[in-house]
Image (cartoon, rainbow, N blue to C red; front, side, top):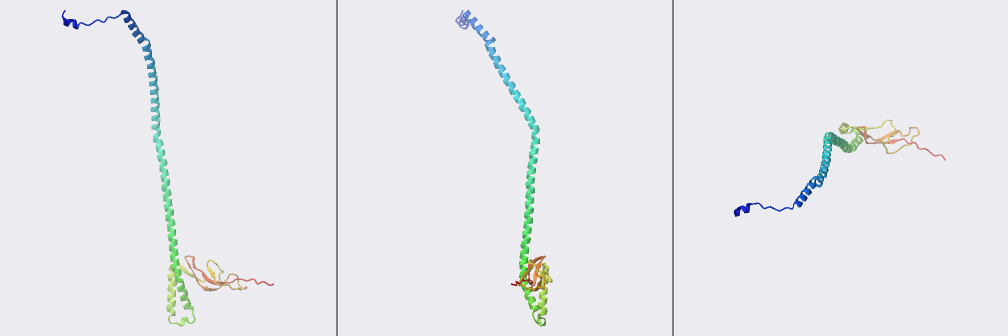
Amino acid sequence: MTDSTKQNKPRKIPVNNGDSTEISSLIKGKSNGVVQGEKSEEFNSIEKESLEIQKNIDLQEKKEEVLAEQKPEEESKSLEGEVEYYKDLYLRALAEIDNYRKRSAREMERLRNFERETFLREWLPVVDNLERALSSEGAEKNPIFQGIEAIHQQILDILKKFGVEQIIPVDELFNPEWHEAVATVNMPDEKEGEIVEVIQPGYKINGRPLRPVKVIPVKHIKEDFD
């Protein structure tokens, strides 16, 4: 036998028969008993846990299906609520704009009336002076009488176009809304408040007083007899 053959020949490890039997028995016992028992308990625990997980997954999937079915309806209701909300805001804004437009129109009309009445009122003293000139003694004999009369009538016509009319009370009782008493007279035979003399004619515009009539009404004075 050569040296190379001796080197390739496997070595034999001496083993005690008793030790071998004991190790084999130990391995067999562990595999049939403790080891397999531990694996069984661990498997049961994992299986139980996996079942619980699967159950939770199934429940979650069912919840998601229910939510998926309810979500469009809930979103629809939410959108309807938002539409109603913004529609209400829109209608309120329209109402406010309309009210503002009406208030502005009324205010502009009031200002126009005020300015027009102020302007027309400034012409009334001119008319008064023309009437004094026409009613003065011997005015008809004056060569310019007809010209003054024409101017007077022309001014009255212009005022009438703007709704201004002259007021000369006849058989009327004193009314503080339309009349201004510059004096009073005691006439027991006449009705109290009756206008006996017009000092200055008044004017109205579109049914409202522009300038009150200056008058002298009757006022009864009670005499005390002691």
